[in-house]
Image (tube, rainbow, N blue to C red):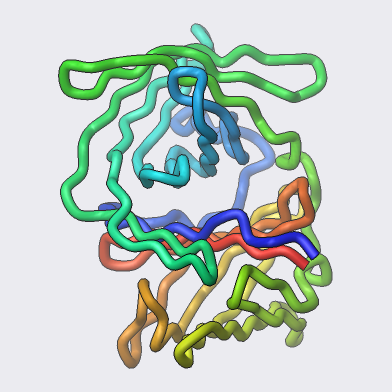
Length: 249
């Protein structure tokens, strides 16, 4: 069994778009061309994992959280990003659970998209943060052209002392998760576009967990996907918080 890579909760602003991916890019949203999962490094060190979806950024490098926007100029191949960098505030070894938030620092990026015949595209350029700066390189993880189906998520997934069980119920999936100290979380998963790996998530219960708990009547929306390493990742936001969870079978 593989183990959990990370779970991140980030205090941020903004909301998640719930629209499905488009087969043809509209002229007003060229950032759709960047949709997908990206792995890379700041200053040629560490590990960065980001999800780009319809111009929004969700990511972490394991020690900080990232939330922001990305844009793409098709004529020049230029990529620009505006990201909020948030420090880690809480961690939990039993589930590799990380919370980042509090004061944030703005990090701006300007670079180019280098397309490859194999669809393994690269974004490379430089960022600035206050009076400092450096480089950022990101590569697609090769999964965005994978299709999606509800059955792909069915089963029991584990991350340390946490687990989530997913089953199908009619036209959508349902999930029930549990963890130490009575932590529970529940929700629904819906198909977005079967040409791409991303699903829509609605989590309507999360309580007694060490972070990102919901009060009665609250719910939060986001995304999940099966990664190239046969893990699932969940990205959800509510009231300025973002949580990222990864599980393996």
